[in-house]
Length: 169
Image: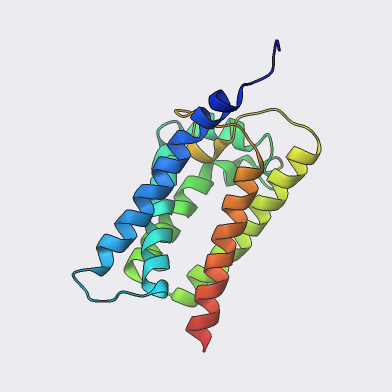
């Protein structure tokens, strides 16, 4: 079994991701209580805002290191380093836009495009068999690039699409 990762070891590598997701979910619920705005749409707004803020923060701890890792699999970052360097700031702006309810249609649309494009890059890297760390949590946390990243990106795009749908109704 040399070189193979045990399931428990693999799971342990994802604990930071699970913590960020769980805290964003709890924070989103807490945001609704004083405003009496309990509902799926309000919860998704809070979740997306907190999730994106947390992920931007992790990337900003080591912006250059994040950009290096991101360029290994993101389709646009591979070709345009300034995009890799700007990405955490884009996430930060989107997170703040969700929390402040600024330009909802534009926020949802930008999220859909960015997350689907990101999912395509991760999917391509996985199909090519790249065995690298996911830059999604910056360089301070060691999370492997896997289908979890595809599901994360696609899930966020789906949530943004649902919010856009209900916003346009």
